[in-house]
Length: 100
Image (cartoon, rainbow, N blue to C red; front, side):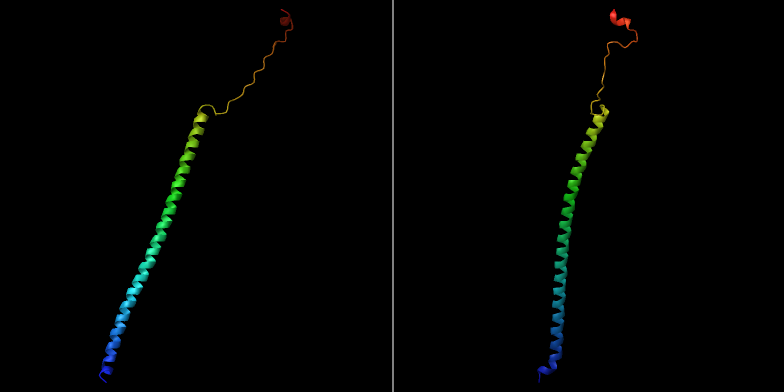
């Protein structure tokens, strides 16, 4: 009969310990989720950094092409202009010049 009066106190102590353990478990679960989220964010950041590097490399390449095109334009377009020159033996209407 001595155990019965202490049972409510023991029960409260066990419930309190259980709540403390549950809080620790919840905290660990939150930390675990947070670490996973951080890992996902770092992975996403790495992906974005790689995309940025690729975009910068492509930009640099295109800027080089633009510079080359501008230089070619400044030099006359880069495509040679073909001028046809037709030589005629006699450009005058005077037929007497041919005989002389």
